[in-house]
Image 1 (cartoon, rainbow, N blue to C red):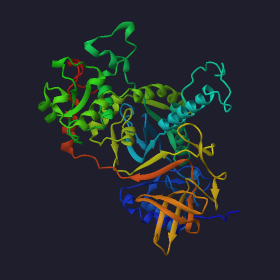
Image 2: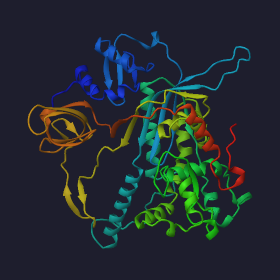
Image 3: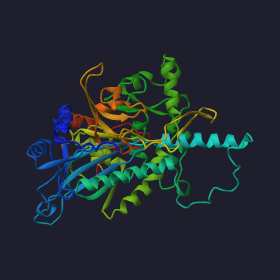
Image 4: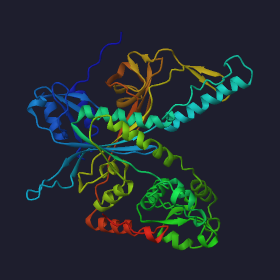
Length: 504
């Protein structure tokens, strides 16, 4: 049996000391009482004092949480906290904020709450990997059927029948991972209500804009978000950069790849983003004549024809996620993507999935946006299949039958102290085990290979995710806020009647 390793405060203090640049960004720490019930998060300085004085124990490293040994929930006071989401096809932003509302003494009305950000997180999904794995498995099984081989019986009407409400596993994965983290955060913080950005991309109207075609009545299926939502879609599609000069952090305008003077339409595949300089310089010139670099031209044309699968994924899972959130018995509020963007632009907050989640719904202000973002990437827990296949579906290698070596498993967070040799130093990160006992550790600076298990100590067991911290830029200056609001309200539009967003 592997020997049990216990993580002590000096070990954790050494790890956190090498990440002190994150402490300077006012990182909040989750706090539990002596019975592991959630209390209000505290600052990193107070957490250090509690740990150093022996009043607290390290409960978890990612996200960092401590457990008090002399405090109970009954003798503590908690405040309402909101957990909000910005669902996306590839990345979902989560923000935990303390909601502060003021009651007017004369009228008794409750003002729009002010959000004090306590925790920011970006959840990176692996839906595309799931889809690719299922597609490869289907192709290999199909070949073993059609090639008259003995490995697979012919399939005949064994699909299980039609399932009401069935969603593809690659899409349902997004819902399951979000709900999993809702349950985790609820165990670490006193969450009182939830908020979701219930965005809908109007793909029917996007496609029907070809050649100026209008749709209405029965042909138009409740699409009302064409004004702001199409801009958000283009910003995500082109990475918030000018497609010609590739500059970032500048005002962008909607650009017709094939100019309307040359027969171009308002179809979504003919729209891109360009800065004012490139837009005016291009004018009515054809994109093939304007872009001289063949590689860049090929990239622009390929990006323009990219399918709407990301928008379809968001549209498919939005109501499923909403119903799952309602099953938590917590109040759930919703907001549109246009409202989120207006709040973020009005408050002068930098764009980001986690910060967008903090701006979801009715908020009057968002404070403390300069928080480090915990990036959580879904890695899975391994595979039941211990055989690796080649491109033709035949075995090319075999994995070891046991998933643990010397008490370690791939995905565990470890700390390795090497005192001599070429790899001397302290390395902490996610471990990948080898049967030889010499592991690879993925640190923040890169992979370190060939570390003996004798130098490793587990600081957190693997849970199917990979964690990394990244700082967030501070909010803009007051002058930049006004300029950003002006740019957002006067962004050139496809139609005159939706060229300006009117704040409600």
